[in-house]
Image 1 (cartoon, rainbow, N blue to C red):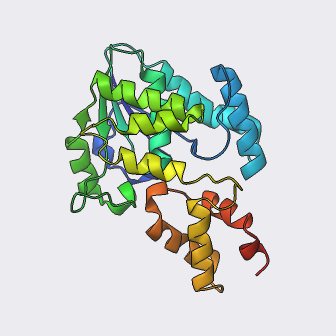
Image 2: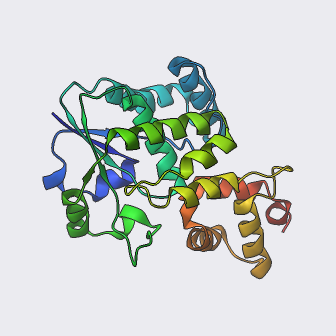
Length: 254
């Protein structure tokens, strides 16, 4: 059997029907945002459901019916299947990918492929799949690459280090050379720069402060667009950027 694991519903709407063969699974999470604690998967789901409910106003039961069920399908993929992972290079996508890979890490009976957007002048276009037309998406699928045991092991270890907030271990793992993840060092560094001693002056917050300083009258749509241009490596959606903004006195008090 063939399984297509997509990072979010937006990608589902973009993909040509002729390449969506097999079972489609959608990873509906933003694991880069919020707590990821829990010694067991049931505990982990409870942590995430509570966070999503408090941060985004979603019903906790909706999390279990719309999100957990998709990850359960990943766990239940039968032996001998081909798994195609549609994930971009930014931090948001990569953390979700690390988690998905961790669910597959013990499975040596699967063929696991990675589909990622093409590079432009050897650099990522942080707009990801959203910048591609259907022909380019089909080409990305044709160019999918097989992940080896070392790649799968690396990403699974990155998830564990991320989950445990082990910054030193993440830094060590990011030095591993991988043809499939050439920007891993930059992405991990961007993650590490999110945090500061006062929890208010990490790299994303400082970038938002600079945008506000340059033009205090920007509306949210303009601020989000500018942040995405400057810090596309984070892959943050409007919900994540709005949450960061609402915690800045410069934004609340203007």
